[in-house]
Structures are given as C-alpha cells and as structure tokens.
Length: 259
Image (spheres, one colour):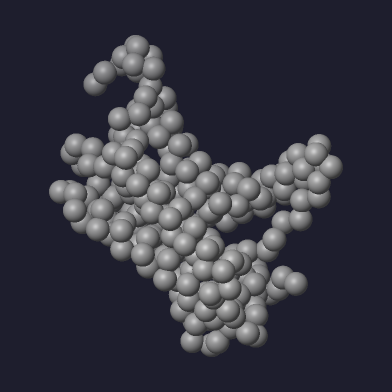
C-alpha cells in the first residue's frame, strides 16, 4: 500500500485515493474526439431543426415536438453506434454491472438533500444573468422549459404527449448518462486528477442543454451524477438518480403549471 507521500508527489486528490473510484475496467476506450463529434452531431441536429422552424416548414406544436424527438433519435443512434463500435465500449460506460451497494442506498437521500441547493443555484444563476444583461441596458426574461410548456399545452396530441413524457422521464436520462457519465467520463480518465475529470464532464453536461439560465445548476447536478457514477462504478446508479430528478421536475411543473 503506497503512502501519503506518493499521493502528494503525484498531486492526486482525495477522490483518486478512494478504492471504489473506478468508472470502468481496463484501458481507456473513448477519446476527447468522440466527445467533440457527439457535440458536433448535436449541433448539426439543432441547426437543422432551427432552419425548418424558421423557414415555416414546421407548423403546429405536434410537428415541432415530433421534430425535436426525431432529432434526439438521430443523436441517440449516433451515440449507440459510437459505443457499440468500440471494443469494451459498453463496459467502459458502466452498463455491464450494477455497481456497489452503498451508493445505491445513499443516492436518493442525497438527491433529496441536494434539491434545495440546486434551486438556490438556479436563483443565483438567474440573478447573475439579469445583472449581466443590465450592464448593457438589456432585460433578460427566462423562458420556461419547452418540455414543460409542451406537456401543459392543450394543443399537444395525447399520444405525442405520452411519448414526450416517457422520453423526458426515461429515454432522455438514458441518452445523457451514456454520453456524459459514459463516453465523456471515460475519455477524461487520463486527466490530471479524478476531480478534474468529474468537473469537466459536469460542465459539458450543463453546456449541452444550451440554456444559460440553467448552466450552473445543471452543471452542479451533473457533478452529483458523475460522483455517483464514479463511486458506484455503474451506469445504472446515475441513471436511476437522473430519472428520479426528472420525475420530480415533471411533478413540480404539473402541480405548479407555467404560464
């Protein structure tokens, strides 16, 4: 067993000394190029959607929601191909094991305790944005989440509402966990410290949503998910946490509908 002198010499952090901090087994499978390509595909999909909407080629809420879901299918297809095409890709993402018991037992209580902090960060983030816009004589008015507006709208057909609800509750978290707590985290394993890898994957998760009003709270939530992914060694633990969080958000919007 190597002592603390070795830890200091290598400039490691507390997270690197934890024996359970093992997101995968064997060599690093994914690279930062894979992460860049994922974001590039996502950006192309978003730009294509914007062109169709701005060109009045997509009319009505149903068509818009269907277009968004189709874009996610394209992104998911690329991600699944990426993971499947790498030898050991699924193992590197942590999908082949359930992980350790203790993180599972602590996941939901810690999520419940962190919700007030996430809400406080949301308010703080919004306050900073408002102040920043005021410096230029502008007013920043945050838009409610598109998913919440769509699900609450009577214009959305029942069947598409069900599909959107299932996607938001399960499919979306599964896709994001595979991308950020799988591919991205594995690509960052050669990083200088473990915490650096966790933090970068969290910030990329926040940036992925392309919403400045939610960047900080989503990054904080991404860090929480990354910690549980790393601690448990399992994709399924962070997925369960992510799906539960999305379910809570949907429930809050249901009982406090946006205008």
